[in-house]
Image (tube, rainbow, N blue to C red):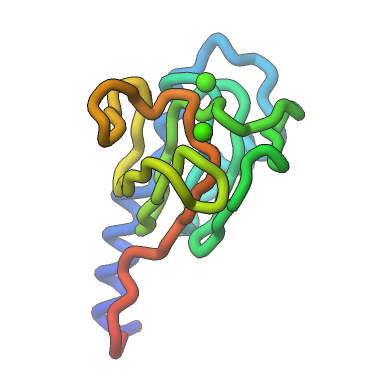
Length: 148
Ligand SMILES: [Ca+2]
Ligand SMILES: [Ca+2]
């Protein structure tokens, strides 16, 4: 194995931890929750949650994925995900750009780390925050370096 690969694996294993363990109140855990706990692979992905601190309904996005209108997307329990996302878990080496409107329009912000409560993330006008505003999203792989 090349030294670079080993380095990347080491970085991954420190980044991939599951912050959702604190959700004791949530007993309706799905199969994906179980798999998530057991997975020790380094996969980059993003999980959107309807509540603060990562409990409850979720919506999983892989690296490279984009959603242009959350009106047509549903959380794990069937509710529309539009204007409901309150926390975001980032696993692995991805950036996430949030948009207030569909079709990647309106206010936007790019985050590189998990956010426990979008209510503390201000919009550019300074008056509003990102809680329950997300309507479209882009997930990009961060480390796209030439010659690896
Ligand atoms: Ca919410
Ligand atoms: Ca919105």
